[in-house]
Length: 109
Image (cartoon, rainbow, N blue to C red; front, side, top):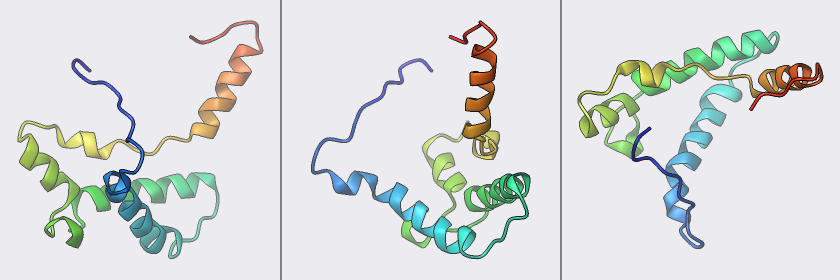
């Protein structure tokens, strides 16, 4: 993306990560502690459903009882709703695929 760059959180700025920690806590209580998974595929299907629910329908009391989608729209009304619908990615599967591909004498840059 044009104009985007990565910055690290400076030492001692613990509150800058509070939104991420809050979401992780909610996911732990509302998803991981409640759901059971038959297999890896079942996990990713349920994770995608929970993510859509969380981003599009679940009001968050710590954020003015708004959903992440409502908060994003307030910042940029032209955002495409599909941005909050990107499914979770199985990084382990991608990593193994990359290893298998690179062992055939080719590497992915």
